[in-house]
Structures are given as C-alpha cells and as structure tokens.
Length: 193
Image 1 (cartoon, one colour):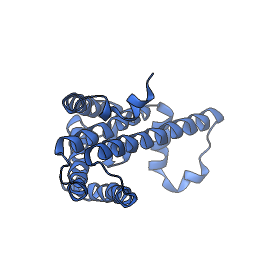
Image 2: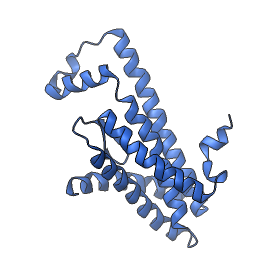
Image 3: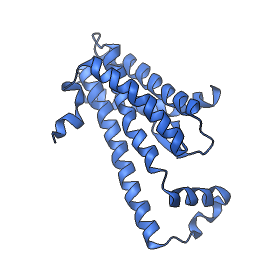
Image 4: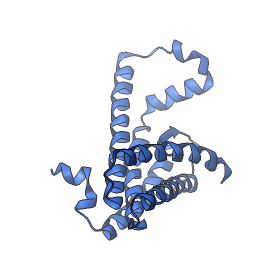
C-alpha cells in the first residue's frame, strides 16, 4: 500500500474526485453516526448519544465542515491570495472521514454500558470495577481513537498546506489556533441551530 496516498491524497487526486468522495463520505458518515448512536458535539469530538437522528448527525457534520472551511479559507486568503475555496473545502471534507470511523468504534456494548454507568453516577467514575478484558479493550480503542484524531488533523494540515502553499512556522501556529477556535465556536453554535 502506498502510504503517501493515505497521508496526502491531495497530490494524487483531482479536486473534483476529492469533492465527490468527500460529499458521499459525509452523507454516509452521518448515517453511520446516526446508526452508532454517536454525536459530533464539537469539531474534534465524538460522544455517545442514543437520541441522535440522521438529521442531527448531518447537521452537526455539516456545521463542522462549513465552520472549519470558512475559518481556514479566511486564513488561507491572508497567507496566499490565490487560495481556492474548493481546495480548503476538500481538506475539510477529508478531515471529517476519520471521525466516521471513530463513531463506529463507539458501538461496542461494553463502552455503551460504561457510558450509561458514568452518566447515572458521575461521582462513581473512580469506583468503577472493570475486568481486565474491558480495560484492555478501552485502552486499545482509546489508542485507535487518538490515532484517528491525529490522522484527521494530518489530512486537514496536508490539505491546507496544498491549498495555501504555507511555509512559515507562524502559519502553522495560526492553523492550530484556528482548529481550537473552531472547536470552541462549534460548541457555541450547535445548540443554537
């Protein structure tokens, strides 16, 4: 397998192909999120929420795509006047793909029962008794979730770098600040829509 293809698909595929793939992935990913009972309640967050509907998942996903696209496009225009909207949008669309896999990981029954226990009594989190298998699975799933989060940020970074031709270290700092700002902003906007 060509790892470069996974790490930087922006060099290998046309913007049209990435856009089509991203739109289809967003719709399917929102449906997967609905089926797994997850919610995207922040730009870089996935939690269990059995009340999630397909419309809610699609709305949350769309908000995150639009929000990070607009913020990064504005930053991109400041960095390089020739930044194209489609390139930043494609980066945002691919950025979300690992989150759909994250929502799939939340369907494990022991995670759902653990989540229910914690929601019933948050103070008892330190008193939970976990068997070694559950503990090992939680550790494994946590490692996979962190890896997927890092991968999503790598995709966003590579797409943004391709879109803007960014080279200065300060631009990378601004990129990180935009992600944090988008996370905060999404937590404010989601309850309003």
